[in-house]
Length: 96
Image (cartoon, rainbow, N blue to C red):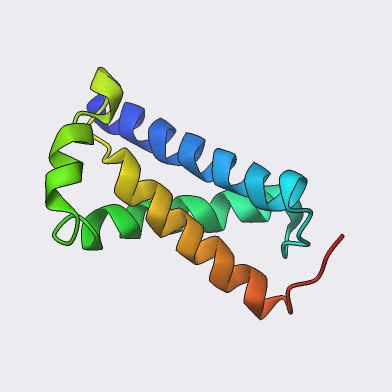
């Protein structure tokens, strides 16, 4: 059951970041909003694994995923944002 909640948390992080890029910044993402969710979720997962060692003191504070899951929210947000930023640059930073 914990794995399902973790997957949902990563998808929520991906959805929030994709909405930020797609609706608020009005960037054209390859695959639209859904493509952005997939890329941001992948970035959130990889960011959680790699950035945990860099920002460990802050991660310890958010380690319990707002006491809902085991997802490190801050590293997931940073990783997802980095992936969407790179994904947007590959798409030539087009505005919708």
